[in-house]
Image 1 (cartoon, rainbow, N blue to C red):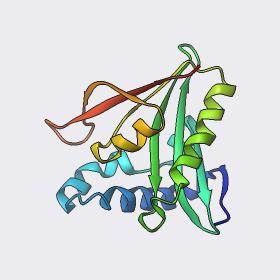
Image 2: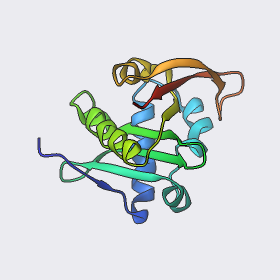
Image 3: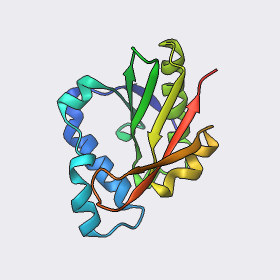
Image 4: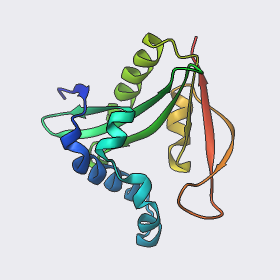
Length: 153
């Protein structure tokens, strides 16, 4: 598979929202859960200007990742990583992750964190993250998510 990774264009926000929804839904969540998550899954031009959105293409976009950087603290947050369900488990997530890790290192970041969907914990652990706590879900009252952290050497 010929995979290209490039910065996302702001006019791709709606497509990235659809990709995020399809990827999240593939974890078996019901419609009520998905409706509650829509604000968090919606990609806007504003979000794309605040963070570094990158996309993976095999002709069409099949995955995306976003890095948000706090230069004052040298800490970054992975705020999105979604792979089209038809392209999951093909190494695309790993390649997007490697791109973001290189970006984080180039910017001198010391630490990355993310709030993981429970279904993605094993993937992030394979990428070197460890669970460092629990945080409240941004969309489901009473639900908590694993907070995961990676120290960058």
